[in-house]
Image 1: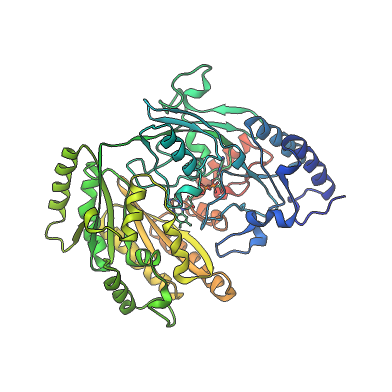
Image 2 (image 1 turned 90 degrees about the vertical axis):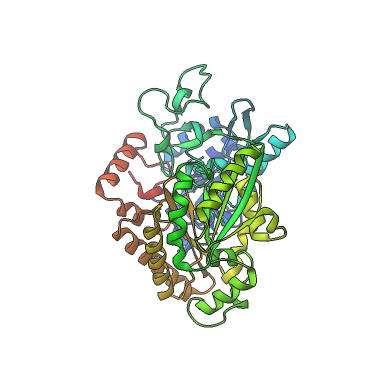
Length: 513
Ligand SMILES: Cc1cc2nc3c(=O)[nH]c(=O)nc-3n(C[C@H](O)[C@H](O)[C@H](O)COP(=O)(O)OP(=O)(O)OC[C@H]3O[C@@H](n4cnc5c(N)ncnc54)[C@H](O)[C@@H]3O)c2cc1C
């Protein structure tokens, strides 16, 4: 009998061996991974948690919806849990690893067909393994003037993975789930559901009308474990005739209050239509330089060191990256409104022509026009050691709240010796406050501190009513608890109705059977 390093909970080695043979008959031997060497990429996590607690029992790479259905049948027979990933690059949230030990990773990267792009309607229907780069290349090769809205790791990652985890990009289509339309989902009983208009045979409007008829279901398949998304419809933004990127820099940390107050009406009224980033100096600097060039002392980086870095790199404490889209006339009109709004605020306004050769500006401008860049991975050189966990509370788009969140985060991070490497991404009426808790994962003491720090951030923020929009695999239960017992109970009841044996991704978002 084959030996396995990790087994699914409650499954004998013999049963697991039999299941593996059945999986191999579905996807082929070469697409079944159980040897430790072949699983290392699925087990490597950056968060402050023990990778053993999240180790996979194996991984499977199916090539079609039918293969996913057949796999689910075997999982049901042996009660083996599967954790679906699209491209598995959920860095800082758990990468490709599952919430609990012993799950089988269902790696959908081979399902990478671009099924349809409708250039007139600006829609696409794709499989989970399609990357932003692949889709971008397709649009360019076929001379289709539509833009994508990738998250910062752009080229490497999947529009499906990003949308189902409710991630964000930086064009006016920045909220990727909001801009999705229609899903195909394999359920735990092996049935295939098409959401929205897609349930109707021969529907012509699956990718153009979200709501269909009756209860709208798409949302329950995001950040959840109610099904495996095997196709996703997307709305793509028509390439505008003109685009203008700019940055507005405020000198002091406390200026976040003013920045958000000025920005909010511009966003709500769609003068600035894109998902705006307000990047703190340590995020800006973190993607550019290394910490040790400015600070070698104990604890979090000193204010003096930050000031030196800001002046060396010509940054503000807060740096607003935004874009204008439309005809040249529309842009000129809106640009005058934007400039007028910031006049007298003490901010410095810089346009694209002032920023030629500025690496931070160039990567932000690329993201705001939906192009590929990996520049933001520079953040991992800031402190070194490969540890990262995103703490991602939501703030209402009001200056005093943004300021209070910043002050609280800085205080807690400072207590543990970490830096406030953060940005606000301003959606319509809120800010995703994205804080990268960077630490040295090779240092056990620092990793333990990072865990304690994350706990305290979560506790203190939720006590003030500031909930997380997304979290990593080690904190899913804790974040679920912050949303209260009724939400948890309803989540659980839906799970039991759709997946009574708990086959799909137990523990995702704190949901079990
Ligand atoms: C430097 C840096 C910058 C980043 N910037 C951003 C950013 O700007 N915006 C942002 O949103 N994120 C950002 N991230 C986080 C992350 O890398 C991206 O969100 C990325 O898109 C997620 O990886 P993926 O697309 O491979 O998704 P996956 O890892 O494949 O999926 C994410 C999760 O969704 C679920 N899932 C995936 N596919 C399916 C499916 N088919 N059916 C059911 N459930 C599924 C799984 O639980 C999975 O764990 C950043 C990370 C780094 C390191």
